[in-house]
Image (cartoon, rainbow, N blue to C red):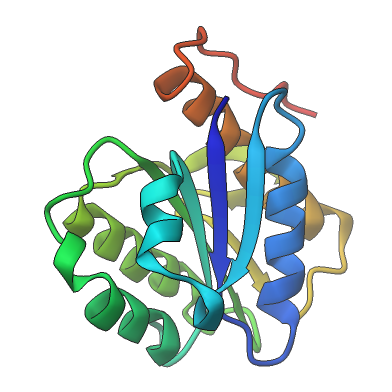
Length: 177
């Protein structure tokens, strides 16, 4: 039974809304235990307990938020190099399109890689010209059907990979809509 942590920071509630959709997507895969945790309430025990993690942050100057970065720099520093084989992915909200949210996802993925997480992108299109290569990205609150679908697809894909890696199940990627 795989364990997924959806870890997020949210200043306006937009990234929190995304986190809820990512968690709902992860719950579509049978046997997943999904925990939603705001970064200020998270601990290294949360990270150690999960098999897979989705990390979400508002976009701050094209990067992850300082609260999320501080958590990994200060709370998690003892685990650097000691996490191996867990699956990770990213999501980010920004104030507008072109606000750097793909760069924020890339900075999250780089951080996870440095800790030993296996990371992935999703090449699926959830709408015409709307995909989540580096993670799910939204400008503002996820309101459009394709924005919600991107978040859900990210969680579902994470849970699919966790079921392969942690539970030894055959690869069963989500069906494209």
